[in-house]
Length: 143
Image (cartoon, rainbow, N blue to C red; front, side, top):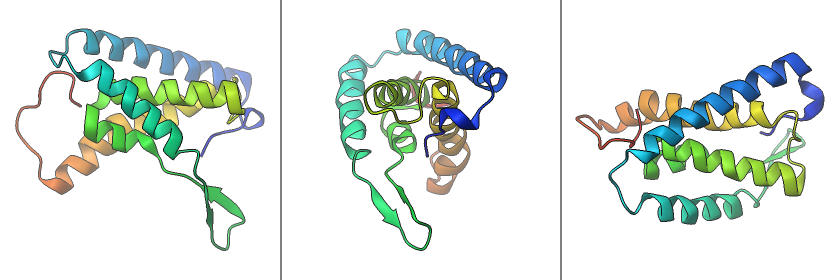
């Protein structure tokens, strides 16, 4: 769920902007050294898919709210953590700028919450162990 601007104080928003920016910088350096030549075009195609898929909302019974697909984990499974973080940050930025989902003050928090946790917490610590995926991974393909 996108956080709204009104939920964050400026110091908290600034801290999460800095954390998201630092994580994006680290991910960018990891992507440059990734040997997979098809990664960048795949990031674009999957980013467009997740953007379109997240536009479809469904109601959550008995809550009065709605939800949509969370693309961070799906992107992590297909691309690896660093590439997925960059893609989900791009999707969230477009959503904030064009559709006012969350707003600019909360964008750092939304990138961190909807990108960092699925890409660097849920995928390597929950999803991979559940599947029994072990062994070495190619550079840039997750943690």
